[in-house]
Image 1: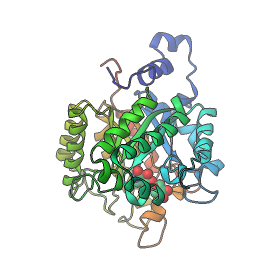
Image 2 (image 1 turned 90 degrees about the vertical axis):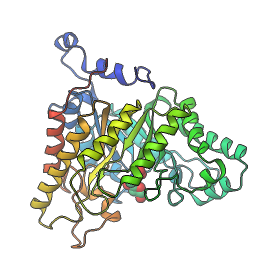
Image 3 (image 1 turned 180 degrees about the vertical axis):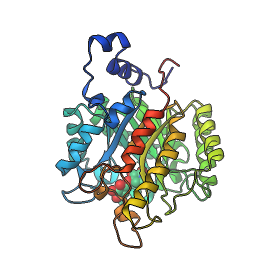
Amino acid sequence: MRSHSGPSRREFIVGALGTSAVSILSPVLPAWAEAKGSLKSLAADKGILFGSAVGASAPGSLAGSLNDAGYRDILTKECSVLVPENELKSYVIAAQPDTYNFERGDRIAQFASSNGIKMRGHTLLWNRVEYTPKWLLDRVASLSPAAAEKFLRDYIQRVCTHYRDQVHSWDVVNETVDPKSGQLRDTPFTKVLGFDALRIAFEAARENAPKAQLVYNDYMSWEAGNERHRDGVLRLLEQFKARNVPVNALGVQSHIGNDGHIRDIQDKQWRAFLDTVVGMGYELLITEFDVNDKDLPGDPGTRDAQVAASAKGYLDVMLSYKQLDHVLCWGMVDKFSWLQNFSKRHDKTPQRPTPYDDNYRPKPLRDAIAAAFESAPKRNRDQ
Ligand code: XIL
């Protein structure tokens, strides 16, 4: 039985796909599972939600994909779930001291609801100083532990209650494990509150989003060099269990090749990590999938083929875990990918990290994702 419960996961999948008897009587699927052959319908056949990040920054900007008609068209055809790329982060919502601005997030929420697409939330506490507004860091640093707790609870209450049940799954805490040391990152939150900062964040999310799946999200990966990061995340997940912190799932960001090298999966170590996570009772999600092609040859055909092959190998491993029922790409069209800025290629050609090219044509990566869904085992919600 899933602890975040509610009508959310099991009932919407059963309700949406229908039992076989219902499907015979009523062949019409709801919007999120429609379009035969779409990624959302291939995923839905296996009890999985497929989707993407979308951004509401200025038109024409990398993080402004929501303004683009071609992008929106792909989202409505392919996606059963969306996640705002930046709009629910504190640096957007609380850019100005003590002022909450949900305008950008609301535009995405409106687009999702009017197209029958579900929405994830990202993220209530991105516990890194580079991604938290300075005023907020200074404020927390100046507070007593009790006052800092109240501040954090108030912030999370405001954000969660604003979106209420529309967000069925929240990345509550993002990237709080330092990859080099495996320890909690040193931030004003952890300085004032220690581990309790995380406990408080999850408790406040549970209180204000009672039905939502609550996720710890991070970028530990399967490649050599990630051992400390993985160990740190496992220790954190153990602590959550030991202290009864309400965490349902681990979000595996899945930015393949993000350190600039696509390398083979260390299959044994990676599976051991995932086995330990699910052995503790956590669900899994792929929250931010893309393939960084920085190291690959310039020729687009060769590059696309290698990107697709790496993706298929990775997704096959991940989808073999039935505890995983969300796959979200961090963008659907290359020209809106954050990697165009974050990880520029030496030959100055644009990255090709997402399923669609700049003319909205599907690439081999899309076929790889489709094939991975087709070969994935079906999720059985009763188990
Ligand atoms: C990135 C966005 O894509 C960019 O637009 C923004 O400038 C920085 O953040 N891990 C995460 C995401 O959890 O929030 C990041 O998104 C990508 C890495």
